[in-house]
Image (tube, rainbow, N blue to C red):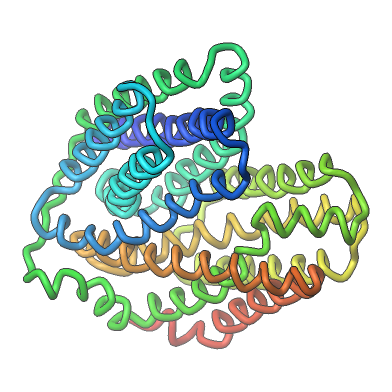
Length: 389
């Protein structure tokens, strides 16, 4: 039953993730046809990130009152209901962005809840492999969904793509409803519910070290935002837009390969996982520094590929360490807290590194590489503290 349930979770979440991308592709097409302003189109990712950040503060209260499966199913039902509003007729820009915000807000419930369900559905020694499976699937969806959505826009139209997204959302509800899990909510007071995730992070040395590393690497993550890479390609590599796509694709292919590597190896000891996290951070930081100081087109492709591998392996092992650090009934609150930090640090990273890139794009990559190396050094020097019981 556990094996079937984890497959239902995998199928359901994969279909929901694919639908999330396809409906955004359809929405971008609709907005561009109405008003071809890049500023308006940039409102979509900003709206999504802001809504998910706000949603992370609601999750602890939901976890205190409802079972994880119920939260997951209801969030998907609400997303599907909001998506259906696009079929009611012509909508203004504000109305569309409100719908996008609501879908992202409800989607924000799913990530920490789904991740906290996984340890209930698989044995501990298989947790790393299933984390890798979920991550690989998500990365492959991110790589394939945008070209697929573009092709379907040409073959059908935006409305047809919205109907496909609606169908995938609906099918994901069926799979999520079929999950069988014995996880129970733990009742706490409202004020305590919001603070409990942070208290748990402060209580466990491993979580404190991993959070510091997460903040440092999150502050560096914005360097891979498309706009900064685009400037690097045009001004430093002196190549056209095609190379912008090559470097982005190389990075994402690296993340997929990194996930496949973890599927093929068995790492059961927490000490080994922690060492992989630290090594992955040091390598990805070193490769990012090389990316900035050795601007050669084919070397940049190779380095972006290597960075993708190292970051994916490090991030997946770090996530697995977090999942096994606290009691399962408390896990979703910890994940919700760390997720809110991720949203803030990434948003700040895009702004700060974007400002640095406007002065000197090479300096942006050197700054990012330095932050990641510092993260690896934090993990290296605090390894005994982090692995303490």
